[in-house]
Amino acid sequence: MHKKAEILNLKEDQNLQAGEPLVLPEEVGLHSGEYKKLFGRTFGEGHESKPWKRGIVRVCGEKKIKNTEKGGSEASRKIVILLRFRGYNQEGATNDRAYLHPLTAARFGVTPDPGSEDHDLWLESATPYWGRFLFYGNHPTDTVRAAFKLGVLGVGMGVFSIILTLAGWICG
Image 1 (cartoon, rainbow, N blue to C red):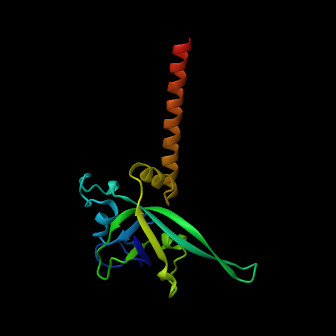
Image 2 (cartoon, one colour):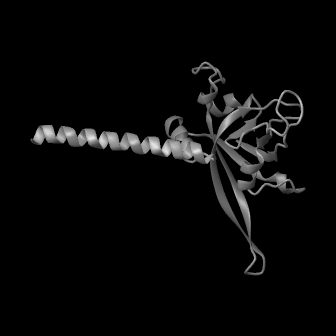
Image 3 (cartoon, rainbow, N blue to C red):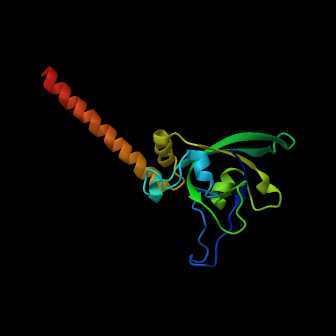
């Protein structure tokens, strides 16, 4: 699915705190009708509309990098980020746009400068189990990423100690 990137400015009215963003750094705002196109089911189907079970979207794009050492030549680098789906139906929202937090947009090279927001993004559904695992392992928030990796390390050490204990009983 092909979309144009757009940065969401900070919201200063309605019922949000002043300066609170409409999408978080770990989310991509898409028109609500896009959920069925990406995941083949409606949002509430199969998980009782629990927000932590939203589908994970694989967002691909290219970031242009200028080489200042060699005469200003440009190169492009493929960027792949896993983001959580967030329905976005504010006025002016269209189906051909992917709405990003300013920090996430900067990772794709999208800035508020005129003409910078015409970056192309490709969206697809991440695999159901590994997609969520990779999403938390590469989460944009350091504390979430560290807690997830420590939890995985703890589970791995627990499984290893159980295997050693069983091996001692069998061989001993």
